[in-house]
Amino acid sequence: MGDRRVDLAEIKERQQRAWASGDYAVFGAALVIMSELLCEAVDLRPGQKVLDVATGSGNTALAAARRFGETSGIDYVPALLERARERAAAEGLEVDFREGDAEGIPFPDASFDVVLSTVGAMFAPDQERAAGELLRVCRPGGRVGLTNCTPDGFAGELGSLFGSYLPPLPRPEAPRALGHGRAAARAPGRRGRRSADLTAELRVPLPLRGPLI
Ligand SMILES: C[S@@+](CC[C@H](N)C(=O)[O-])C[C@H]1O[C@@H](n2cnc3c(N)ncnc32)[C@H](O)[C@@H]1O
Image (cartoon, rainbow, N blue to C red):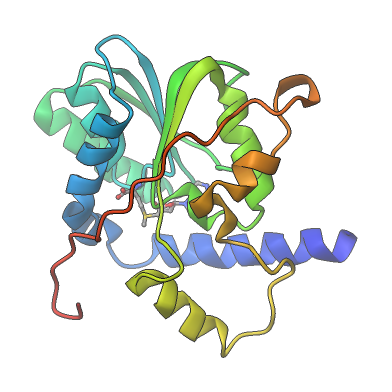
């Protein structure tokens, strides 16, 4: 158990360094359509309190704010949050961007009507913990909407290829379980009760165009 925690912490530290290097915001602009589709999928309404977990440069938070959601976004890379603030200012949108970890979301229980993450929370090394946090900050009867890569898509296959050259993960399913609702189904809800039902899974090809793809 102790070893497992150390391993997961090390994985996260490396991930964080990777997300902070280069300029993810440039690549992230290609994912805007995913954020817009996710906001439509959860039928976001004006005035709803919305949290975008692992917001990066703000794609999904901005999509929610464009629909007049009262929006917050968290990420563990401060430089990306700066880009998100610049983008919000450019569009005249109000979003509360703050530093935070998907495995320890810095908001009280039941703070939001809608909790979203676009290819973000799926990277958390401890999938059950992250799923538990998404559920915890969502009010009873609220909605959690996730956009995730699938194991049999391009990103999933690339991950498997890399994984075949790496030491085994502390848990075989990390960091993929969230993508298929398995971690959410297992995560403890408030007061230990399971508090979510997986109601829909929509598979959409990743609309990416780029020199490598
Ligand atoms: C592929 S990017 C997606 C960013 C954004 N959601 C978008 O749609 O462009 C993954 C993001 O997840 C963030 N991230 C990964 N693990 C995280 C964690 N445990 N806590 C907070 N942010 C995390 C990274 O910093 C990065 O910004």
